[in-house]
Length: 321
Image (cartoon, rainbow, N blue to C red):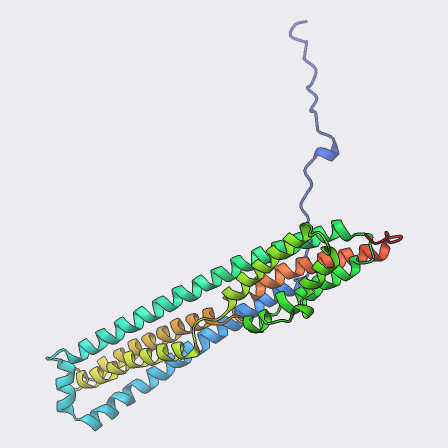
């Protein structure tokens, strides 16, 4: 009887369907305007950087042998042999001085432009955060009153005419007359008499706006980059001179190898200078703040649209304060 006894099967307890993990469904959302802008900026910057670099490299590869032969016929074989030997180390000192000047200038320029971009990003994040705080405070204070729609319009005007206008000079934006300033209109509608919390937020927003405009102001003139390109050209000018003298004793095989190395060097220099120039540009490149600014402003404009829709669906306005 003991051998015939079998224990009952164990029941497997399963959680209710509400607690079961749901299978993730891939929802494809169409790309937003900010994503399209970021992709366009990336493609445009890649083309602007790579196409000139490859073109300069190919041109240097083709023109290097002809340039060396032209120098050989112009200066003579004996003169080029003395220069390629460089017994007085004149060419070496020339390359060292130009190389040091070019390295110092382009290194400091890159660091300066990169730090400026970091300052612009930090200022934009702070300004957009304060603008959202201003929108929330204006909703709490003015919601249901006749001035609420005008305050929302002033915030939208500030976003369209100031925050999004990265194409205008910061000095032009800062020189706006007070009567055309939407922040002045917001203070007039909300803080007449005893200044309230909105007055402090608007003052904070003005300070963040000043930091953003100061960070976006270009500090380096175009002449600075012209000097960079000039130093780069001077540095590569000595290599055909040395190769023309060495080809008289080594042969044409070494000249082809030197032509390939010269093409790689000129392409790398062009690419480096292009990166620094793209960092210097305030807008229109993958290094600029256009894509991030579009994303931040898109969220702020969505909030403004939602609050306008709430005004249209509200039953009635409260009496003015």
